[in-house]
Amino acid sequence: MKIYNTLSKKKEEFVPLEEGKVKMYVCGPTVYNFIHIGNARPMIVFDTVRRYLEYKGYDVNYVSNFTDVDDKIIKKANEEGVTAQEISERYIAECKKDMEMMNVKPATTHPLATQEIPGMIEMIQELIDKGYAYEVNGTVYFRTRKFGPYGKLSHKNLDDLRSGNRSLLVSGEDEKEDPLDFVLWKPKKEGEPAWQSPWGEGRPGWHIECSVMSKKYLGAQIDIHAGGEDLVFPHHENEIAQSEACNGREFAKYWMHNAFLNIDNKKMSKSLGNFFTVREISEKYDLQVLRFFMLNAHYRSPLNFSAELMQSSKSSLDRIVTAADNLKHLMENAKDQGMTESEVAHYDASEEYVKKFEEAMDDDFNTADAISAIFELVKYLNTHTDADNSREYLKKCLERLKTLCDILGLVIEKKEDLLDADVEALIAERQQARKEKNFARADEIRAELLEKGIILEDTREGVKWRRA
View 1 (tube, helix red, strand yellow):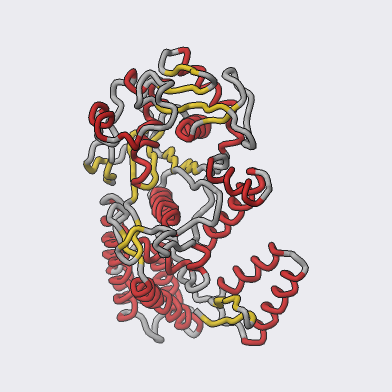
View 2 (cartoon, rainbow, N blue to C red; view 1 turned 90 degrees about the vertical axis):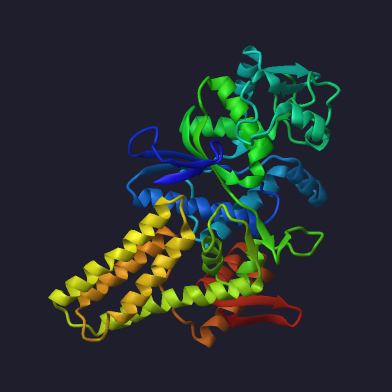
């Protein structure tokens, strides 16, 4: 199995640090609002990487954090007149709902930055003791130039950064020994959450959080560190500097980064009005369609989101779901007997598509080609199954199709159609729950209906619904 390593800029054979085990860290979202579809891409991509590694027999320790202290969280809390903790807890819960609807498996551990502050203070102190960091007026900075390999991930040269990218430098540079030094700890500002430290009250810089959480839950050295390509510099570059300076060994063997997501060929931004949350998309589509859409391109290729492409993804996914449903239907009336010789031969021949699928996934997780292999399998099964087949043969064919789809996190079992009266009854219950301010139950009902292919739209005229 080969993985494209951002560090070496080439595909490398995957050899884990410990045989049969994979330690994987994926940078999670900053929780100050509903996650957007740009956040969804790494979640879906690296969940699929994890699923394939598990399919190959690896025991995967998968850690993905929530950044629950940050300027944006504090700003939102001040706007609403609540605590930063209240904001982060609310949106962690919402994020987990979206992840569940996208069929993203919960991480082995989802650490929260605010619960790991003592470890951060400890690592910062160690960096100071080793001469890699220094304190000025309550702020602790990392001495970037002291870490010789700085720039090895982003392939940037320190002198070029200094001369050409003033915008990359953080504020307070007059206090710093070097404009490229970055913050490990910052002093408290009025109205902000803060923790006691040897350098006064304050909070950690963003980069130190992941170094500490990764070390605590996975150890000083890990197999795979992953995230969006926007994190390569400065976040991941700074993580390497901190971790390797502190621990005296290579931080991560393989660095994986997914490419950007554009909307109608433009960068997603609120100012352009082309900003979509996962929750908004869920009001128009089953989120399995979003997952299929994301995986229908290689993770390192830029991906363009549009209504047309989502509609096309829905139709394609429907073809797979229909094939699975046909097999289930045939099984209901099939003869309960062993497989015939010709059925054994047909089933063995379908192994070719499993091999194609595995070859695609072994080649840097090429999900686009893996999906093509699934469509070839669908075509083969449609051609080589009928009402005369044995139940055992049909069952094995369905299991083969489900196994490959499950690796991609695609649920291919048709949702049972609800009767109109049942839909109306659940909508009425949801309206009552909202009146009683039981928003958790209201959200549960919306999710339950979506799960069964019913999309709700809250309008001024009341709740409208349609089948997906």
